[in-house]
Length: 418
Image (tube, rainbow, N blue to C red; front, side):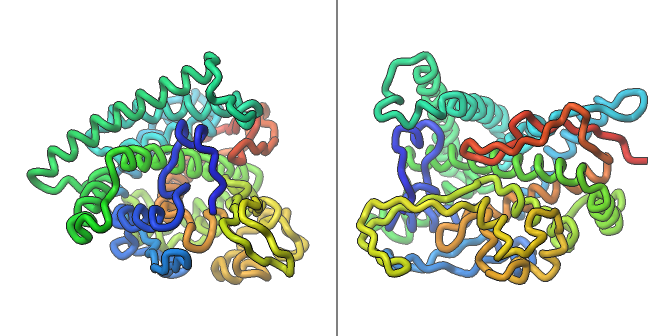
């Protein structure tokens, strides 16, 4: 089972990532149409087969539908590179902390893909959720004190105010969307797809298996933001840092992008033919996985490696350590070598299951392909418009508090491509 921190989770995000058993199966089933793979032409090594939940006895499809999402990705990325272009000095260069800029980008993407025409409300949620994460990070060493979240501190009061405002906005958006659904379909964004799927699920199963409540839909929307915003922005940040350190791979990636697209619009088929860019993203995920560890808790007595563990024992699987284990990856484990993924994930290491930046098994991240497609789109548009290198002010200091971030930001010098 997932390890639970109820008071904390309520303020940040709960949902399919934290549920167990039948409730998890129901939420995963209802969410799947918003993340459906058949209409997205992704390479077979990215597709994940149906998975089996042994406790529920059911297969759960892990799939992704981004057919309607690509224009939103493109619009947000175009706005970002245009903003950077306008910031260039007379010499055609400028210095940017890309960690902040890319978080804003991914917040914009979630706002547009989740709420479509209600973008302004979505943007407000992003601003509030960003503040919430910042306040959590500032109090990280106190939060684990039993009962601390109930203390009437200034920070705790503000976190509750933020949560109340987020939920109020979401409740209003959901109410308006459900009213609109009385007429025609509104499944042109994640919220619409989720509500349509919830309605269909209730119609098919009747009262025997109730669908999601309004409160549960609200929590899933909060999770869209927290998971979608943080993971992809961190991946893109480290990718720009690493490609600044390895200009030969930056040049190879740019050459591939220009060779496939030139100055033309990016499309599904082209994005999914990007071999060098894909290898680079995988290698960055190996070296700098956004989620540095996953925890699981035994829910019944279990034997592992000849040792019997009672219910309630917490296990931590360190993604960071396994991704940096030379017995699994070889003596060059600490080197940036994207071509180790030239034949796909399964042949990149001595252990096929050793690469798991998005988790594994039935609980693998439902949005992994969403994140990778967004990252490809953003990186391609950046590479077409800019060359980049580390700014003199950059200090390399990977730091883990929930996620693996650059402690002092990611200052990058951008130069317009010739």
